[in-house]
Image (cartoon, rainbow, N blue to C red; front, side):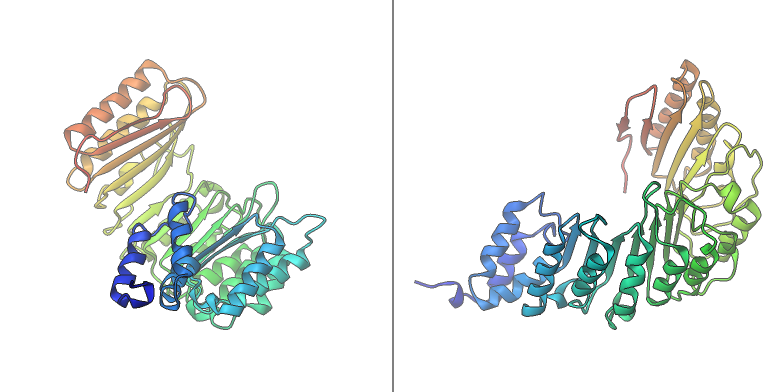
Length: 390
């Protein structure tokens, strides 16, 4: 009777692909498909050829959030012994600093695991202590400077975040970054210009996300860049205080020939805006209130496909914002495919507000635009497919 060893390699490849046909195991979403994960483990133990086929899938993504220190050492030892570290492309790390797990032991665990990798493409680090990043910086694998394409650093409003000067040092150590995500940097940092300068020095950077706190946002964002961004997302950031409109205009002009996605910071309580010429812009997200309701009309020349509006207001103020949104829909009716509205009202919506939202929804329906609305208070979530979305 034929066994696995007797089957052709091509057949084994098909079996492995069928087990993880949606790529959940490779993306570390095994909680969705535990049977697939167990099946791959079983296949891996069948013969050497199957083991060689399965290992790259099982080791592609390693997420060790809240895992104990011992788990890190276990992964590092196994990765080093079997050389599986060469398969790791995506790595996510977070160990809470506690009296029993001080930062030296966390630095040691991170450093040991990073040292086993040689083809890492994305690195996500949740860290509230500057000492941890300062500790691992001198021990980063030499290959990381050329292989790493995406860096995600996460802080917290209460627990803090890594100091900007250390963020800058880390970015300089990774010159081939294509995507940088920085979140949870709430407190203003005197070193912010250094972090921004490091970002502007990246020659391959295409996507920059700074969200949930403006501690790293600085007016020097408008200075010269070494790259041209495809995506700039400054979400949940007070632009009026950190990046005034004239500087925002300069920043957007620098990237106008490449920018396809934009999330604009808050510019609340401001009623006049310049026109922004962004001929490639397709995805736009704006924060508006009753005074800044006309901001969406400043992008009338862009070929928008997706428009997201986050509305802040009191009872009765949503109507004006919804009416302006309707004008924006008409301006982009040749390209627009999706409109999303999130209403964060401090009081329950009035009838005029609801009528205006219904009119906006009806307009989208007539133009075969997907419409989605979510209101924090007053309405329940309302998602409808009102047309064909490509």
